[in-house]
Length: 167
Image (cartoon, rainbow, N blue to C red; front, side, top):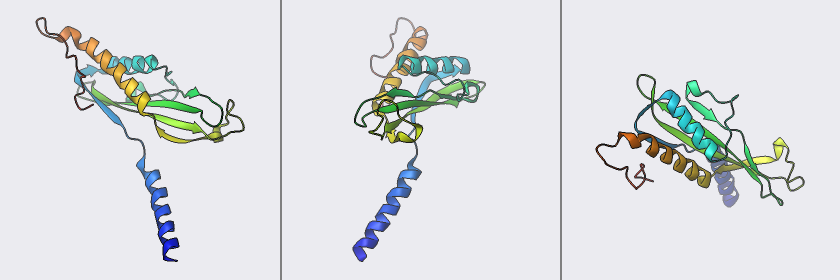
C-alpha cells in the first residue's frame, strides 16, 4: 500500500512538473543595440538560412515576436518530427533592440498508421531541438559579426571566437 501511494505521488509530481516546465528560452545579447527594423531583418534572415519560413499571420515584428511555420521531416515507423522557431526581441531604449531570445519547438509523429500524412492529433510533444537551436544561433552570430565588422577600430578584426563566450 505504501509503495502504491509513493508511485501515485511520483506520477502526479512528474505530470505537473512536465506541464509547468515550459520552453527554455536561449538568449543572444547584441554587442550594441540595433534598430528594431534591422534586428527583425537579422532574425528573419537567420531563420530563413535554417530553412524556416516566417509565419506572417502569427508573427508580430512590431511587437517583437517572430514565429515560423512548421518545418516537417516525415519518416516511417513513428520517427517523423516537425520544428517551429519562436523568437522574441528584447527591447532597449528609443526603438532599439538589445538582443533576442529564441527556442525551437519539436513535435513528434506518434502515429504509425499514417507516417507520411499525419493528422493534427497525431503530433505529440517532443520538447526542444538543441541541434536546430545551435544552427540558428550560429547564423545569428555570423550575421552579427558581419554587421559590426565596419565598427572595428583601425584595422582591428572581429574576434575569431564566438561573440557569446558562455556558449
